[in-house]
Structures are given as C-alpha cells and as structure tokens.
Length: 288
Image 1 (cartoon, rainbow, N blue to C red):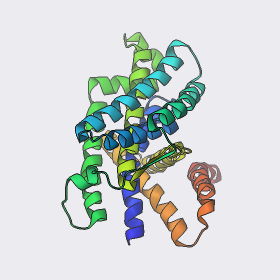
Image 2 (tube, rainbow, N blue to C red):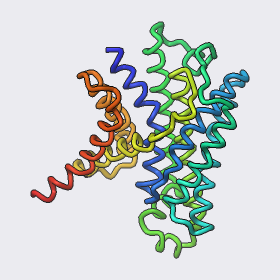
Image 3 (tube, one colour):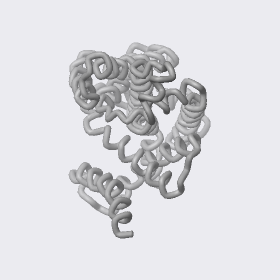
Image 4 (cartoon, rainbow, N blue to C red):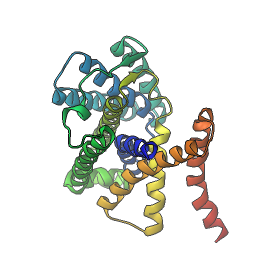
C-alpha cells in the first residue's frame, strides 16, 4: 500500500509539470523542452535555500521567479530572435545545466535533516499520509488559481493566441508578449514541481530533470485522450484530468515495478507507455 501511496505523492508533485506542459503545448502549441532544466532549477534553488535556513515563503517565491525567468528567456529567444521554439527550449535547457550546477555546487545535495514543507505542518502522525494531505491542498490551490486565470480576459487571450494567432493579433493583442508570459508561467509551474519533489525525496540532484519532460507529456496525453473521448470543453475539468493524468502515469510505473519488471527498464517502459497512449487512439480511429 505504501508503494502506491508513494506513487500518488509523486504524481501530485508532478502535477506542476503536467500543468506547465498543458499550457505550453496545448494552449500555445509550443513544444517547450526548457522543462528539463527548469524542473531541476526549482529543485536546486529549493535545496540551496533550505540549507541556508530561508523561510518557506521566500523559497517558494524564489523558485517561481527562477522558473519564470527560464521560461521567459525561451520565449524571448523564440519570439524576438525568431528561433524555432524547440531549438530555443533546447538552448535554454542546455544553459540551465551549467546554471543549476553552479547553484548547487555539487552533483547531489542531501536534505534529510532539513525542515521542509512536509515537516512544517503535521495533520497526521503517519509521514506519508501527512504529506498526502499537504500535497493535496497545495495542488488544489494551484489548480484553482490556474483555472481562475484561464477564465479571465487575460487567460482567454492566452488561449486565443494558441488557437488563432492571426485573429487575436488583429484584435490588438501582443502575441509575442502572450507567448513569453505563457512560457514563463509554464516553467514557473515546472519549477514548482522541482520544489515539491526535492522536499518529498529529501535531496536535490543535478540530473533529476533528465527526461522529466516525458512525464509531463505523458500526463497531458492521458488527459487529452480522456477529454477527447468524453468531449469535455470545461477548463476546470480539463485541469483536473491533467492532474489526474500525472497520478495515473505514476501508478502505471509503480505497477510496472510491482509486477517485477527490472528497474533498469523503467525508462523504456515509460517511452512505450507514452507511445501507446499516443498511438492507440489513432489506430482505433483508422480501424473504424
């Protein structure tokens, strides 16, 4: 039971990445690879500030700002220098590896003795269950904030930029600014996942973000598949399904390990699982 509870906790931690990928790929149609670097950036900033005994609200603010700056840089390179969005993300992700290593000062930083978000408040005596309550409240707050933002005039302009850039530009909206803001928001959410995961697992690692974009992508694809099947148009339900997609993704990986699959094959299983999610609906459509 604790095995799957851990998967649930990790899925909730990865909800920020899923939301970030949802904003960049599904709202703006931008394949943003900055995710790998901004996730690690959130983790290393959290780790270093915890070792310097900074208050929680200061750490959270710094993480969100760092992630937003990384995303904004990708947006500026893409919109102002007219560089392909995929290449812009790769460039920033590559640069962030050096930035993260400079911040961390080493390849791995243990934090087991440090006070964290999950030790600050004790709703329950069981550590995992207490973390679940805190993460649940945290992710719920994030979901409500994003849902509210997407329903505002600004959020509608963001969604319109992805759906019909020429139309929204004709209405006087600065689409470049919208893209930069959207990527900043997406990577701030991604860094937030790093912030949560580092405190949950008790260490920050320079390689923690390698391939993490596939987690967010898989989560969003799971959600998108359900959204298309059920023909959901509600922003709120879409966000809930994106969050659920992150949890489902982790449950699948946990089940894979539970049935005895070699842990060395986990990345292969992850890739195959995402391929199946992407391919099966299309194959089913062709057969019908």
